[in-house]
Length: 116
Image 1 (cartoon, rainbow, N blue to C red):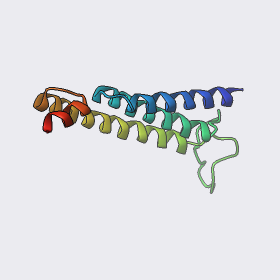
Image 2: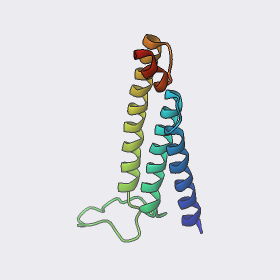
Image 3: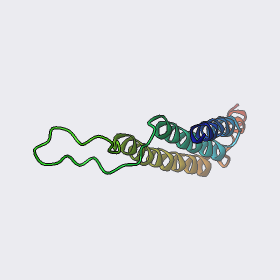
């Protein structure tokens, strides 16, 4: 039941992100980009089926961790994606801020109409 709920949440985040990216404002574009990043992180975490268990510490002299331990790879991938997504959004905010300072608007359609 939990996987179905997470699948619905991932779908809703993707839908909201795409909807926001199709709006005319650059700020809404940034919000949509952020929502898509969150949806991708949740999708990755859900697809990995996180398990509850002890940490994967390999005992001395053993070749592999004991059975039933938690897999740290999905958590590491999601954490890395969060950090990269934060950097991308911060850079995009700086670009939008500079464009707004230079051009005086955040609407891309108005920018094209003033160039003519």
